[in-house]
Image (cartoon, rainbow, N blue to C red; front, side):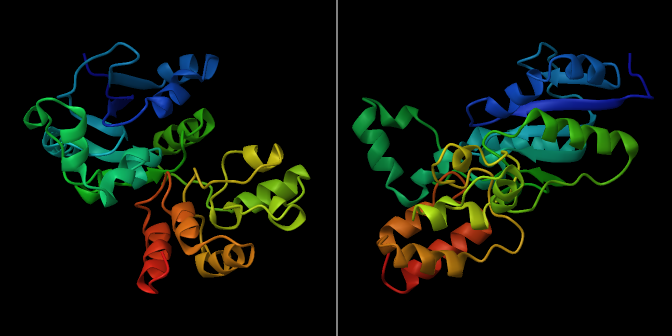
Length: 263
């Protein structure tokens, strides 16, 4: 029976590693508290199954990579009052989008004895490439705290917000030395949004952009800095075309280098 006082929520998976769903499951006691405030009607990893249910909010993990995915995401959109894309795969194509610039047909033919049995789209794309998305939660994977904040906002009837600051701000707050300046390591922190707690710079290595582009990301300046550090144009393109390759800001930065004939 439907409870009109609770937010009806569904969690759906497309092409992904399940890490963002696990971020929600790993909330522990907070998840138990949350379960008392929402009506979780579909979440395969947690138990309930009702993929056709009409819901207030649908959380979608993963990219659209097959013809079946296209039909399924349209069906989910039609049955959801709000749709939230969670994680790099859903917001920017994820790791699987690295195939977008390759000859996918040739790859499949080289791996499978019957390539005609493999149904896949030419490109692996974010959810927003196929349907309207109401909010995007960036990260690879997202954190449980991010997920909880979004649900709490929706319960209060306010628009969710995600941290759009740069990883550099987290390094400063935590007292980490800048690996770009002090060690000459090509770090994506100046253009990547915060949310991970500056995990990689905190361990003395470079940020590789897993939380996607930050607000007002100056990719031109960072590309120039990378070049001054000796990175080749191809290596710079690869920095922007990684986990969040289909994020418009990173995609434009890579295309600009390619148009100059360098990458």
